[in-house]
Image 1 (tube, helix red, strand yellow):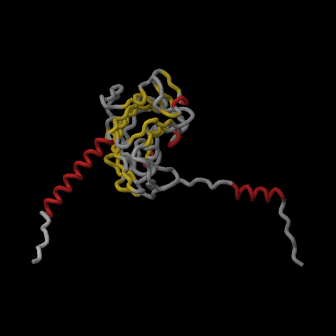
Image 2 (image 1 turned 180 degrees about the vertical axis):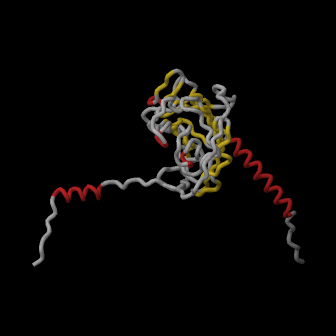
Length: 275
């Protein structure tokens, strides 16, 4: 006679709960042993940088009307303070020069990724990390100015907590055709006037959980500024839209290359006429 084993109801419910629970996300690590970026003291902050004539001003200290969700952030004394949610620009951009001024909280709380954390997401998916990296250790491809989880900055140019800092981001958007990647994106970043990303190739979407991979998307997409739970401050955000100018230059180069190729091949001779 076979013996019967009766499970206690509580054990059964616990087991079912485990089966139904979502899997815990695992952190993606590239496995690359990056060298530590050297600390470089930046020049003193000289005050807000006035936007050029062709710039689109996204935040001038008065309101965040240029953003979806902008009403969630607090505006005080001409400064926007992160609160509640990410904000996303209403306009979309491809190739651009983006200027951002920001400051980590003066009162130091937390450490590593929990200290003065935010981010600038180009096209909503390619992140340049904002973090209080002043005497604050973390993984190198996640510190301030990193192309998140893909490339550390060339230097740690952070000022002290509470001091104003600048990002000047020069972005060349990826190109897709018929759902396939034609050319990857590239980014150059100046942090407080110090070069920290030098025409860095973007390998795909930046993510804490997944390796970088490209997914086709429109030529223009919004900018996103991250809420990571820290009251990072922003001011003087403007962008220069360079997409049409870059495309026009690319077209001019392609035209000249075609002309040179045609000259090298010479005129096409007509076949002889038979009697």
